Each structure stands twice: as structure tokens, then as C-alpha cells.
Image (cartoon, rainbow, N blue to C red; front, side, top):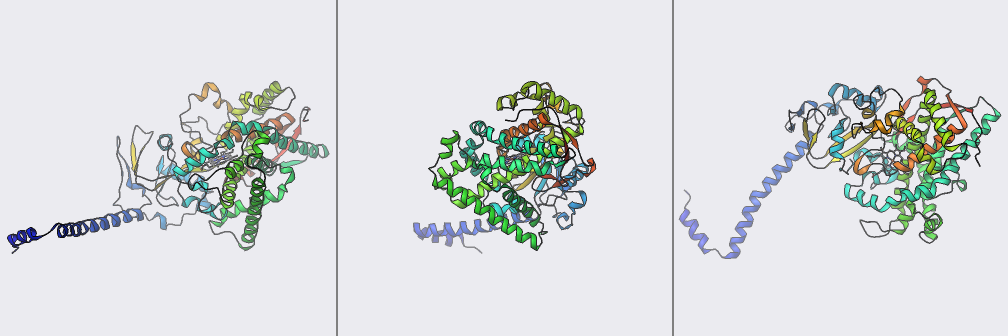
Length: 526
Ligand code: HEM
């Protein structure tokens, strides 16, 4: 029997110090096991976190349950051969056809759902985190701590710091030199056609060169005339395709060696660019053009996190990330727009009429380019049908209630869920873009655009981590299409069925887009 009197007498004999000791021991005895049980449960939830389809219960009105107690999905043990579907996007297309707007099973990544619901985009616009593991393959080039995986706060501070580098001043300052690159390409093509009227062009290959020159000029103010651009571009191509294949373990030995060499070449180049800029007084480029490029900002500012100057290594990683993000994207957007024009001669004619009317044979300036409404519509429609980026991704750090378009049904996903947003699947949904297979630039006309379902058109992503270069890329693409349309009619010089999309870091044309350029009227290119 417990003798309470004895215990009570004992307590009366205690001093303050003894009393505090007893309290601490009691607290430890209670708190430690509670924490242990809590963590054990949390780790069990994590392990079972490829959310099995049946565990997302979309209830009438709001609720939402991801069934935490469900057994781990066996999906992750299944061998999912995505290539047999033709790539990740065709695979997701099939999963969405089977599972609806929210796919939660048979995904190759853990804790991940794929969504094609604009309400979910809307709800996650402010989310600024991306899942680190999805971008791990970039580490050999961009470092562990790269821009793609900056957390939300850091990304927001960084974007604020560097925002002027892609702003209006830079667009105005760079426009002429970017147009000069375009003119140089057109002149080269003209000569080739003059020498052989049946000459055909690999439009992707050609425009990737243009886009590399333009991106280097925008990001680093490099006059690419002084640079061995073909070696530089080739090194980027090897690194980008190497990074991509390396993640699947399919980079064989000779390519791995080439990959490492190209990495060194690019890093060496970046160090030179940084050295040169540091040697000049900071802001030299600003004095020259009136606008600060990314390199100006990085060499003349402290890193917001550490409040110390950016190291050469950090700068190399950041500028490499920018060039990587701008090079292939803009470089494939132009040939895919040309492809669309070859398949829609009436669009081509209407576009040339607009260009000829506004320019009357002159070269386009920035103002005139922005007056070309139909040109803007053509490029937007091309980015709808052929978005260069396959998907966006966000990481939800806490449990989140996600609304859906379906009669206000919502569901909740647990903390650490990754959301994948497959861009093409939004763009090809007939509910948002009627007759989606039709290339119809007028769907972006002023009258119709206001009827768009919000958050369904997203070639540049959306929200907190949207592409910061949308404006400048649109200018580059429009400018190049305008120059081509002034000089040439375009005809596809390969079978349409041989134009095949290949998912790399961006969606490329596997066999290029081979085009015949047929000269039209003379435009003075001087
Ligand atoms: C047609 C051209 C382009 C397309 C379609 C495109 C598309 C995209 C997309 C889909 C994203 C991810 C957005 C998200 O997660 O919501 C992105 C991010 C990014 N893009 Fe672009 N992009 C283009 C051109 C460029 C250019 C020319 C540059 C630089 C000069 C650039 C720099 C970036 C950067 C730095 C990010 C990462 C932003 C961040 O993480 O906060 N992009 N882009």
C-alpha cells in the first residue's frame, strides 16, 4: 500500500532546490517518451508517403483526407518504364486520363502528386519552395546550393536583388545588339539560299546559336563576336545532355569524359568573365549601357544571406544557371514557332501582312515590335502548343488544403508533398482551350483573352518562382520571327511525323526542325 502520509511528510521536508529537481525529472519522464512516439509516427508517415491513389479521398465540400494509416504504396517498387510511354509528359497524360485532375499513384517520385487543376495553381501561387531532389541532377554543374533549389525566402531576396538585370532598362539597352545577332544569321541564311535555292536549314540548331548569343549578351553583356561561340555552345550542349542522362545512369564512359571536360571549359570561361568584370571598376557595364546586367549586380553586391561579397564560385553557379535557363528554352521556342507557321500558311500570310504594314521594309525597333499584336498572338499560341518547359514543381512544407475546380471539392496533402504541374496538359485541355490541337493565334486576341480560365496558360511557370525572363524572351522570340518573316516564306523540309519531341532539360525537337527558306521581298538589313 502507498503510504500517502509518509509521502506528504517527506514533501514538507524538501527545500526549493530538491523540489525543482523532482519537477525536472517528472517533465523529462513525460516529454521524452511523447516526443519519441511522435517522431516514430512521423517517420512512419514519411515512409508511406508515395500517396496511394485510394488514400486521397476527395469528399463533398471540403475535406480531405490523406489516409495516414494506409500501407505504403507498392508503386515505388514497381518498375515504371516511362520511356515506353514516350516520356514523362505522355506518361502523366495517361495517369491523368486514368486518375483525373490529381494523380497520386504510380508516380516515379516519392511524396508527389501531379495536378492539372487551375484552382491548385491559384492556391499555390505564393509557394516559393521547390523539391530539392528533383533538381539534384543539376548539382555537378550548378552546385548543391543552386538557384533552382533556393528556399522560398532566399529565392525572394535573390530575385529582388537581381530583378533589374532582366528589367525594362536592360531590354532597351540590349535590344540593338540582340537584333544584330539576328540580322547576322539572316544574312548568312540569305547567302546560303542565294548559292543554292534548295538549301535546307536545321532551324533548332541555328536558333540555338542565336539564343546562346542573346542570352550571353543579356546575362553577361558579352560581345559574342570575341568569343568562340561554337565551342562554348557545344560545351553547354554536352553538359546539359550529360546532366540529364547522368541522373538515369546512362552516361557511358566516353561521354562522361567529354562531360567533365566541358564542365571545366565552361567553369574556366566563367572565371575569366568574372575576373575581367572585377578588374574593371564595378559598374563599368552600367556606365556603358545605362543598365546593370546580372554580373554587374553580383560583383557589386553582397550576398543577402551572409552580407559578404559573392564568391567567384557562387557567381559562376548563378550565371551558369541563368544561361542554362535561357539558352535551350528560347532556342527551341523559335523553331517551333516556325514549324507552326509552315503548317498554317494563312497564319504566315496574315503575320507577314502585319509586319509589312507596320515596318514598310524597315528593321523592327522595340516600339514597333510591341505594336505587332498578331505577332504576339502567334508566339503565345506557339508557346501554348509547344511549351519548352515540361513541368513546374513546388514543395509544400506544411499540410495544405488544396481546392479543386470540381464543385468546390478540396483535399489536403501532408507536409513535404511535392506538386508537379505538367504544363502541356494544362495547355491541351479543351475546357480551357477549345479545339486545343488547332493552331489559332486569335485565341490570344484582346477580345478572347479576357474569357480565359485564369491559371491555365503557364509556359513561363507561375507565382513566386515564375520565370523572371518572360519579357525579354518574348522580345527575343518575336524579334527573330519578325526578321525571318520579313525575308522568307517558310516550308517544312521534312516529314511532319519525323518532328518528334524529346524531353531533355527542355523539350527539344529530336530530329531538329528542317525548313526551306524561300526568299520574299527585299528588306534593307543595314
Ligand atoms: C521561351 C523562353 C523561356 C521559357 C519558356 C522559360 C520557362 C521557364 C519556366 C517554366 C521556369 C520555371 C518557373 C516555375 O517554376 O514556375 C523558368 C524559370 C527560370 N527561368 Fe525561364 N524560360 C525562358 C527563358 C528564360 C531566359 C532567357 C532566362 C534568363 C536569361 C530565364 C531564366 C530563368 C530563371 C533564372 C528561372 C528560375 C527562377 C527561380 O527559380 O526563381 N528563362 N523559366
